[in-house]
Image (tube, rainbow, N blue to C red):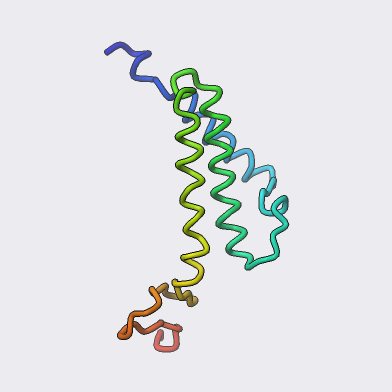
Length: 115
């Protein structure tokens, strides 16, 4: 194995992380572009996933060793978004705990017993 073979995917990894860092430190927010009227955290989740997928797309197109995997990376990143409505319906959230709905013995910790 030569040195350059072991660096396959380097351009992808570098570009992927660089795009995310530029977005975070420049203040650019995909959430502002979404303009979805829903819970703030849902927009945050969708925005983070879309930023990640867009970063994957650009990085894969720039990296010749990853170019053939572009469609799989993008679809693999987008398909889990289909779970968001299901998770929103069946997961109960509190400030300190997350519990699956329907568990008869589950208690949601509201932090009242913390001292």
